[in-house]
Image (cartoon, rainbow over all chains, first blue to last red):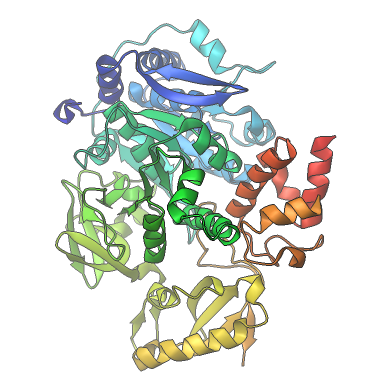
Amino acid sequence: METTELRTLQDLVVLAAGERPDKVWLREKAGTEIAEKTFSQFYGDARKVSSWLAGQGDGVIHVSLLGPTSIAYITCLLGTVFNGNVAVPIDAQLSPEEITDNLNRADVTVLFYDRRFKAAIETVRSACPRITAYVCFTPEEEAFSLKDLLEQSTTAELLPVDPGQCACILYTSGTTGKSKGVMLSHANLIDNACCCDNEGSDSDILLTVLPIHHAYCLTCDVLLSLRYGATLCINDSLIRMMQNIQLFKPTKILMVPLMVETIYRRISAEKKKNPLLPMKMIGRKVFGKDLGVIFCGGAYLNPDLTRAYAKMGIPLTQGYGMTECAPRITSSSLADPSTGEDVGRVVKNCQVKVEDGEILVKSPSVMLGYYKNDAATREMFTEDGWLMTGDLGYVKDERIYITGRKKNLIILSNGENISPEELENRFAGCEWMAEIMVYSEEEQITAEVYPFPEYAGKAEALFRNKVEEINRKVPPAKRILRLRLRDTEFEKTTSRKVKRNQTGEKGRLLT
Amino acid sequence: MLEKIRDIMTRYVDVEPEEIKEDSKLAEELGLTSFAVMSMMGDFEEEFGITVDESELTDIYTVKDIMNYIEKKQG
């Protein structure tokens, strides 16, 4: 696809359907069968959704989507943005109260939902008076469904869409404080979907396993597969991810480090049982023979995992980004891999600089701002318009190296700034440790650890030794002075990151 | 059933099968993350010929809960 012709998401859908009308774009399980949509079938349905939405309110309307990824979900999502309305994908793991809060704060008036959320919809109906239309993704008795919508709609005309207008509001998971609605324009998303050359082809088969309300999934699974005419297969549940890998035989998958790590544990167990079986063979058994690469993003990826996967013949590549950048700031590929220490090469059109240790970004992918939150938007930018990532690091040969996060800085009374991640990363490779968090408690740097339960008896001694070893290597101000050991996992955000502001009980203080 | 469950669980936790007891807590004692529990349930689907519904997993805390769940699903 000639990317110079691409300015809006409408262009992307129109061009994809024009180039490969009869090729299958989307595949998903439907009972014992597999349902498919070609690029042109999808285009037709998206235009009908767009046409129906035109009758749901004057001017631009905000349309939300609730449920796991499905062909219906993607149809309604792109049907919404097609002629200039705004899509608001909601995190399906939130409580009904959090869902209604997100819907109200984004001024949503139309809601598409999965039938499994019927109970939550009842709460929404009473708490979101502005929502005037509800559409169920699948046919349901006594509910208006997407099938009804498609049957009664005509095909929408192509209306001009301004590339600068908002296409999506994506809520950031909010490790601290209340979630913020990131407004991404058509131009932001198109820029990010086109920020790397030669990163796909129409023979690619992607399996989408990440939640679709994440920018990473939206841009790199949905938009990239449209751009390259690749096939996108939908994972119906994380429960069946491994089975779906066997079923759909993907050539590429996007994952977060937690997934890569868990699968590796399973593979290691298999190796233990069959020590003579080569790792490559076990890898092929688990991932199928077609999988060529796993893209990792969203959190710190331990370089040991990259090396372990390489031994199985499955390259892991990683990128770095944030929702506010739609999301990619760096990327790596098989042809240009990251070493494991860096997080990839800065993408096209993206300028990066480092000020006071913090990585700043300026690019056409950078968001319009937070929805109805000018104060928070202002806090994210420098006076001359650079986005402050909150990440500490450095740039060398156009590659970014992350050393920690400024947002979680520990600022001691002597003026020393300490990045908890920098200290946490020093525990990498401790096979007894499951999770760690470093924070300041009564002006003392505290390390709190959740060890793997099988090490419960030995964890205290191992922890003390490791801290002693670290303290010998760091400047005095960075020494860990307080140790806490816990017997439960840390609280997580819905994207499975450890929450920095834990509300539960702290671990046992070691004295 | 416990034997089969133990066998599958040891794919996700580094403990000896006999250390997995019926009253072992999945997260607190065995150190399973929620993603690991989901993956494991996928293995149980294959092993026991059941279909697991993601929304029903919120009530599963221990090995015994898994056994009860599988038995219920098998009818």
